[in-house]
Image (tube, rainbow, N blue to C red; front, side):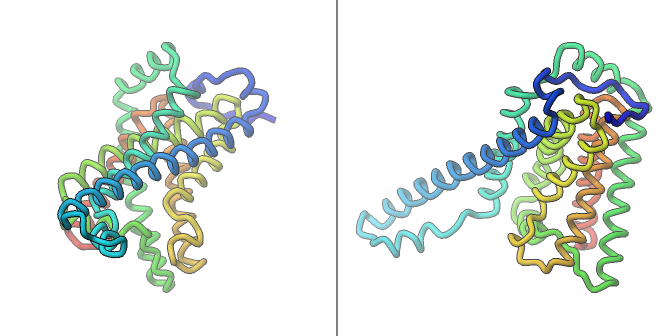
Amino acid sequence: MQETTGAAASPSVGAPYLRRPLAGFFTDLLLAVLLMLAVMFVCGAGWVLFEGVRAGLQAGGGADTQALAKAIGKPGILAQLWFTVLGTGGAALVLYFWRRRASLEERRLSRAAALRPNTWWLAAAAGIGSFAFTVAATRLGQRLGVAPDPSNLALIKQALASHPLFLTVFVVLLAPAYEELLFRRVLFGRLWAAGRPLLGMLLSALAFALAHELPGATGKGALATGFLLLVYTLMGMLFAWLYRRTGTLWAPMGAHALNNALALAALRIWGAG
C-alpha cells in the first residue's frame, strides 16, 4: 500500500524503480558507499605518493622505508576535510547526474517553491529546531552519563583552531549541500517518487545517521552510539519532511546549513559539542 499525505508533488523517477523502489534505494546506497571509498582511496594514495616523493627528495634519496614512512606520517586536518568533500561530495554529484537528475519541470517547481517566503520560514524553523533538539538531547545524554559527543567533534575542534575559515565553509556550505543532495534528493527522493515517502524518510535518515556514526568504528560504547544514531536519524527525517513539505531541496539545504552554523557558533563561543 502506498503512503500518501498532503505534500508537494514527488520528484520524477524511472519506471523500473517505481516497480522496485527498495531495489533502487539500496542500489543507490551501495553505489554511494563504493564511490566514496574509491574516491577516498585515490585521494589517500595520491597524498601518500606526493608526501613520499617530497620526503624522498628532502632526504636526498638516501632514506630507507621506515624513515620515509615516519616522514610521511598521516594526513593532516585540512587533507582529511578535503578527502571528505571529494569523497562524499563526489559520490553525491555522480549519483545525482547519473541516476536522479532533476527534470526541467522539477527545476521549475523547485525555483517557484524557493521564491515563496513560507519556504524559508519553514527552513529557518527546522534549522533552529534541529539545533535546539540536538542541544537538549546532548544535555539529556550527559545527565544520563551517556557522553553523546559526535565522533567527529575532536577533528572539528582541531580544524577550528588551525583552519577556521575553511572549516566554516566546509561545515556551513559544503557539507549541507552534498549531504542533502545525496541523502534527501537521491535516496529519499527515490522512495518518495515511488509513493513510499514515510519509508523513504526512515531509511534515508538511517543512512544519514550511519554515515555520521558507524557502530564499531568510532570507539564509543553501544549506548552512546545508539543515542547519537537516534539523534541523527530524527534530524534526517526532519530534513526529509521539509524537502517534501516545501518541494525544493534548497529548503533542507538551508535548514541544514543553519543548524551547522549554530552548532559551530556554539562550539566557538562555549566549546560545547
